[in-house]
Image (cartoon, rainbow, N blue to C red; front, side, top):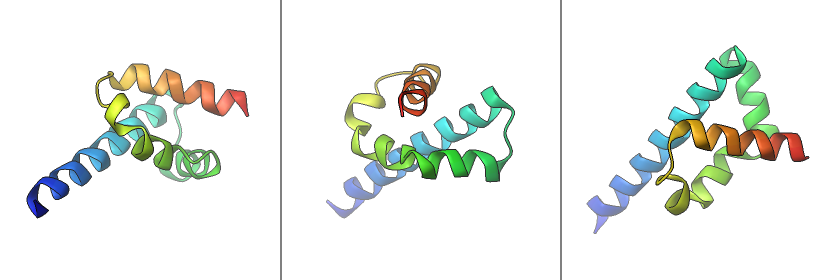
Length: 73
């Protein structure tokens, strides 16, 4: 059971990191600037909370979805 939980946590972290890196690349941001956006809009938490749905989507789709969150606030 502990191993299964660890795998899910690793998957969540991997997805968060993949989305973060894709967001940085899309907007040509450095780590600090992208981190400020992700923290200001709670995007890491959003990815964690909606992992079961989001992990089924591609990273490009998720970044577009995150754009909607950032643009909608």
